[in-house]
Image (cartoon, rainbow, N blue to C red; front, side, top):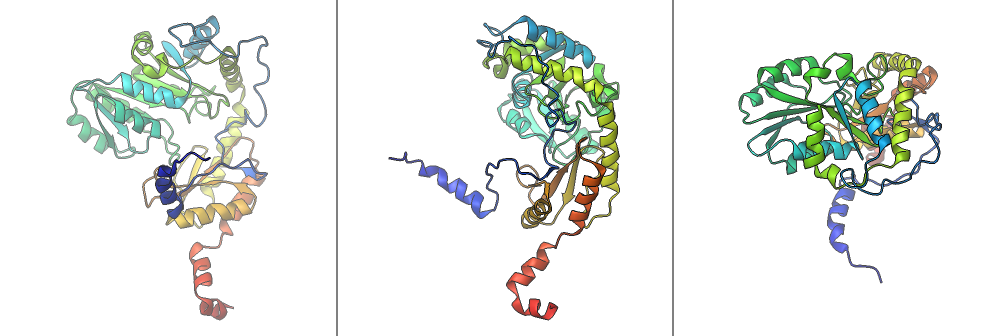
Length: 385
């Protein structure tokens, strides 16, 4: 007898009616313009030289029985790579974002975060004791207005590169603004690690801002091609999180196998300069292309085509897929309602020819309004013929 969980149906049916229902799909044979494997570490199976004989589990949380020498030495090496005083490994980027925002800002403090921040940031804002609010995306004037009204210790959260639109945060200007108001800047670099800096150290490092940023959060699930995340800052911040961050204190530590994979990825990143060079070339090719849809300006692998509606986002993505390319529509709540788009991700393994074919496919899309007119108005179809 099936358990009666029909109370879940209402929200699922609402999603279906809005054409927003998400479902799982196995990878297709289409050319990858979707994944976050920017440098091809996953596709090219570059993380196969791990030491053998490592434990598959840690046996506990970090502050109980889950600490071990390999994770401590890996944190030391990661901190040195990014020119940080200390590093602390988390199970995921989601936990790292959530944990920092839930534990560091206190009652009477203020948390300001970019409106296009990752959902984990918005969840962190819901449970933080501080007064939390958003500022308009990359809008320094709006940020300044809110800084002027802030109280207590002030924390500003942004992303070095935003998945929602492929833009970069104006970090240098944000640092100056935060200094003016004695605010603490937290930067998530999950979509910039591996891509910026001579060795892939990230955008904060490339700009020389390591010593003026309160905390950096790097997720390893994108260019690094593995699992986990790290929070970097002072030794004091590390000890604080070990004592007050529930997402760390009450989560089983990553295994030796996983941590060894993380460090293998860090050894590979500096070698991928040719991949970074090629990636920058095809990014420019795509940005320069004449397309029937407006492109958001981006010098990162994350490219977006703006469309007029959810219906058109699904239609455009499906036609591109039928042409042999794997892309995805993006809709609310990932982006505001009315700001639907199609996300195209470029990789170092995408050839110039594949990018040219993708551009041709986008230029060959039949506008959704023409299909709608054809299917709903037979007379119009006859007259057109």
